[in-house]
Length: 145
Image (cartoon, rainbow, N blue to C red; front, side, top):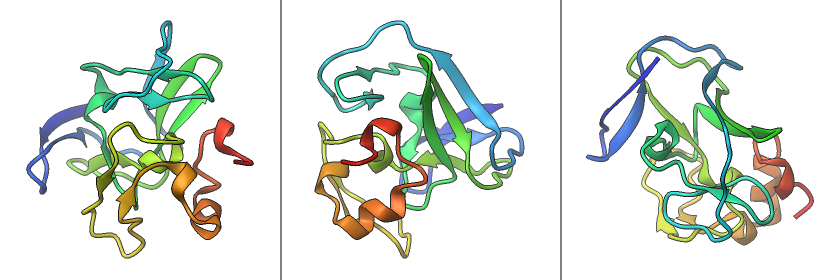
């Protein structure tokens, strides 16, 4: 389904071993434990809960401002879902701004997208226009914030 290797930026990334169509679930996990505070690798799933993927698939899924996947969180299950066709050997990415209200480790993005957000600090720091552009992809707890 997926594998890890070094991407074009010299970082470990998650890559497709098979083709995925838009809407395909790439990875799914039922969560049983959460942490209250974010860290570099945690993913925020609601107002107060973050989960740490440790050495699982999502820990190796890098950010892109033009991602091919999103994080979906429903009924204690987190999923990585393709939002456009993904071909074998494409890197799987999601936009960290669609899950994190405030990142524990903000960074400058170098994804190269024409729509690059540049400073990846968290959803909280986006302009109203930027927030609007992400609405179809954000987790439910971010709606209306």
